[in-house]
Length: 92
Image (cartoon, rainbow, N blue to C red):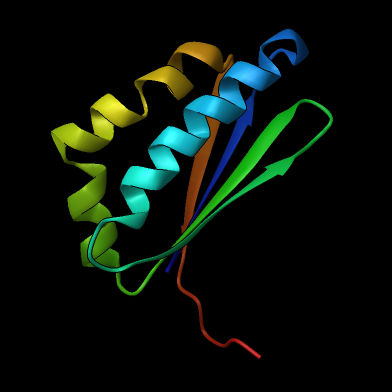
């Protein structure tokens, strides 16, 4: 499954945001079921994709106090956020 998070971040805070993402992504990578974390830049902020082997593993991490602590820096720097969760059907 893939979680897609779109976040608006002021350009002046971009470097801070990228460092905060690296810290959060490192923690996510250590979790059972995490396949990859990707950070993409847009004109107004960032798109984060988070791939997991199954939704249960993702939800367990998403609800954990460790995730809440690790992503606090991201929340402090964004001005808006939207998340979508998708089932991956095929990879080629």
